[in-house]
Image (cartoon, rainbow, N blue to C red; front, side, top):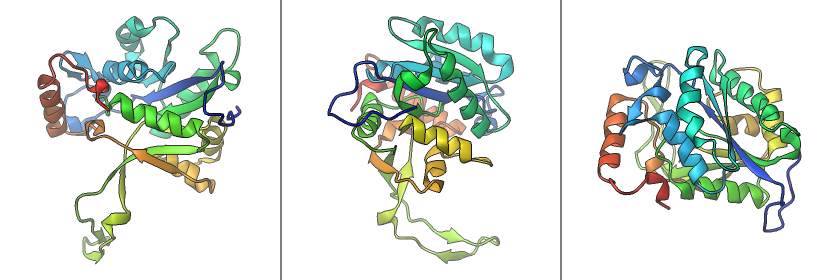
Amino acid sequence: MTHHESTGHPAPTSRVAAVVPAAGSGVRLGAGIPKAFVELGGRTMLERSVAGLLASGVVDDVVAVVPDDRVDEAESLLSPLRVGRHVVVVTTGGAERTDSVRNGLAALTTAHDATTSAAVYDVLLVHDAARCLTPAGSIRRVVEAVRAGEAAVVPVLPVVDTVKQVDAAGHVVGTPDRAALRAVQTPQGFAPDVLLAAYDAAGDVATDDAGLVERLGRRVATVQGAALAFKITTADDRALAEFHLRSRPTAQPQEDP
């Protein structure tokens, strides 16, 4: 894959694809089913995540990576989103998140009948299904930064809590300066050749795709994240997400900046 040089506008045939890992068990949420298939306001987190990416106006295609026994359900949930120019693919996950993202990247090569992803995509995103309220503005900022020439981009927020570094026994050994710290969100965006190289070089489990790019010695840029892009991991997170949805009866979170 090649990364188009920035000219201020994307190449005429360029597209953006997003891989959405959604194969996790979601034990901490306590719902008894995989987290991505838990409903918020009548729609699963998987549906909301994929729909939000496509509704951003900058994402063309999405690959959802789900558990083996949830493929048919995911196909049914996401089928209504296969409209117009959008390609939505469902594939199976692996033992670890890293394996699931690899499977998703491999599925992109079959997203189009007449070509491969090498000739199609100039930006690849990886987005947590559990960040299903992510606003369109955050997604657009990531894509714009990659198209402006950055090899890897992550949306971030300032860290507002004091952070302590502790040892194995739980004793404090240091207090990092929070002014230099950022909380990282998704989608994380990449020039395709860089992301593929990072995964080719990754030999172990990784929870942060940009971290794999860092190991290559490549620069990772940051853009402004969004409060609504929080990760729904616990029952309290789910309650907060439901509150946000109830407080916006006529608007989608994806419409926010």
